[in-house]
Each structure stands twice: as C-alpha cells, then as structure tokens.
Length: 221
Image (tube, rainbow, N blue to C red):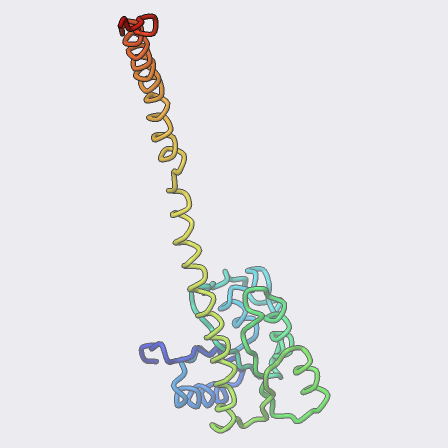
C-alpha cells in the first residue's frame, strides 16, 4: 500500500473470504484507491470506533479493546452480505445509525441474487448492491458516491476555520476607550472657554464705563 495522495479515496472493504478480499483490494487499487481490509463486520466497527470492547460475535472469543481511527477519513465502505456473526446488512444499519458516519456511502456485495435482500439493503441506505464476482466496471459506479462525500467534508472545513478566525477579532475590539477620551477632553476645555468669554465681557463693560459721554453737551454759537 503506497503513499496516499489528495486525489485518492480511502475505502474500507469487509469480507470474510480471503480470496474475495484480495480481489476487491486489487480492483480498488487499480482505481487509485487506498484500501483497508477487514474480515468481519465487528472488526469494521472497531476500525471506525463504533464497537465497544465487551461486544463480540463469538461468545467464546476473548474481549479486546477497540481500535479507534477517528482521524482516518473513510470515503466508502464496501461489504459482503453473508458473513458469520454480523452480516453486511447489520453493518449497514450500524453505520447509518451513527451520527459521525451515516453520510459515508455503503455498498453491499453478494454471490446470491435475492431481490428481497437487495431491496432491503437499498431501503436501509445502501448506495449500490453488486453481485459477485465484482468487476472493475462495477467500481466505476463508486467514484461519484466517494466524490460527493469528499466534497462535502472539504466544504465544511473552511466554514469552521472562518469561524475560528472571526472570534478573536470580536474579543479584541475596545470601542469604549476610544470614544471616552475625546469627550473627556471637551469637558475639560469648556470651563476655559467660559472663563475667556467672561473676561472679554468684563473688558467691554469697563471700556464703556470709562468712555466720556457727550450726550449732555450743547453747542454754543
């Protein structure tokens, strides 16, 4: 399994048959997909972090801690229908009941062509139902489903980053300090202006009192 590039999709393939797992892995890799394979529905849930440590398909099997891969992006789950313990239909229901993974496309595979089984899976939310053996032409139908999921996640990430950037800017605003300073200066200047006006009025009044009056003087001829 090589390095993952941005153009690749990550597919979780689930099948209890080693031969079928290898075949589906090889076909998906030809389609430039990164593939993780597991041999049961319970291990698929462990990989997704949806399985508790005390759950077990086999009552005699020892309990093991779940392996949580929440940081791994899964673009599609393709699973066999007939598996011991947890069937592909049961896995489909668990994924669709999860708030974190219900948007991941799920594809069911089966070697038996049972119309009622196919209808039940499609009604539960499966994107496709393939009959085995799966061909490379079948996998071309998966690209639109994986692209839709990838674009949705990419569109959600920038929105979260924008909200994170805007919040600190709102906290740093301090308009109250900026607005108070000029008002304070104007209050201090008002007494000075009134004192200057009072002095000017007093000077005018004193000048009028000292000025000689000629109204009572008559002209002698």
